[in-house]
Amino acid sequence: GLGSSLSNFVPKLRAQNRLSEAHHYVATAFTLEVIVGLVMMVSLVVLSPWLSRYLFADTPIINVTLAAILTFVLVIFGFSGLALSGYQLFREVSVVNACYSVLRLGFLLVMIYVATLDISKVLVVYVLTFSVGWIYSLIYLRKSFWLTLGTSDLRTRLLGFSSLLGLQKIFVSISSRLDVLMLIPLLAVRTGPVEAGVYGIASRFALVYPLIISSFGQVLAPRFAQYKKAGNAAPFLKRAIMIVAILFLSQIAFYFLAAPLITLLVPKYTDAIPVFQWLLIALTGFVVSTPFVSFIIYTLNRPYITTFASAVQLIIIFMSNLYFIPHLGRFGPAVGIGLGNAAVCFISIAASLYYLKKEA
Image 1 (tube, helix red, strand yellow):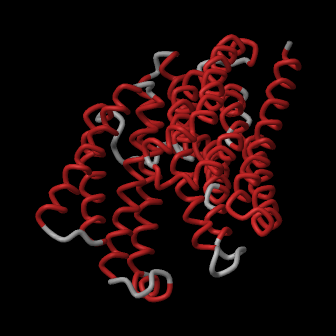
Image 2 (cartoon, rainbow, N blue to C red):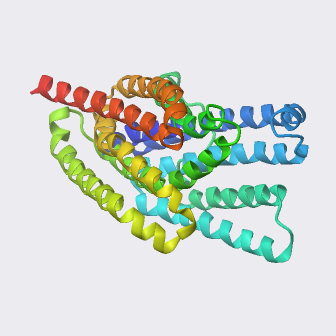
Image 3 (cartoon, one colour):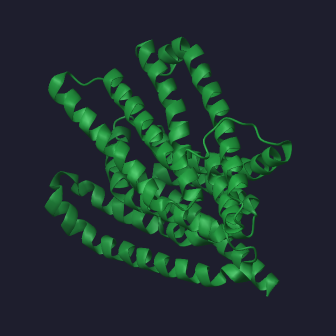
């Protein structure tokens, strides 16, 4: 929530040539992120013996400790990407992401050839590569990264806006994991793991759209934040909808090309084809709603609407999974995701049209 909120404040301050104030917003948000990250890391380290025994099937405590350190590193690394997006340095975001991705792949390949790969070594690789990626990001953000709690007014603005975004992300995070979490428990012992495996493969294929939309949303946020009135943002909203239309057409193309492509490239995974096609349909609402969600949050400054929509989505997905997974098996989660995304799409479009009409 704190990182995403920067796209609301930084572009407006940059447009007014108030760069020093923008740097203070980023520095204050970074300090708050560090505090949250350290609290999380220390808590996990303290609880590591209990977590190791009861949650991670007696995995060595060192693995839980490494995961705790990784949690902190991920917090500050993720913040860097959002801060760069707030400054509209999208090329730099790509460079930083490519840096850690190449390093991670390189380290893993070295580990595979030099020693036996295990959980501890993988966690060490992740800690090192994300740390290097964060340090590399400081090249672009060095003027904004220092520790300060800022003024009380600045903190109030940051926390007031980011708290709703953070709550929304919690709802979305839970919703996105309910499919696999509920699939096995709601099915028979013998069929559950198989159904979950097939669904898991299909969801990996469909992951390309959430990744694209996530990047698209990072680009949209600071652009929408530059507009003070809904009417001024309308032309840009229309252009964003045109891009969404292209993505929607690609979904249709992938729906019909899924069977021949998967059969040709990965024939062992043909059982996942129908599920993948259902997921493509289910993701339509998610893709279509993207520009409207950014418009509501960053132009209208009404994040409570998207937080409410995400809460409704979570309830719909949970209730749908309870009914459809026992009846449809591996196809059940796709129905829940589709209905949940449709609800977010309807709420975000209706709210956008209401405020556009209201201002006109």
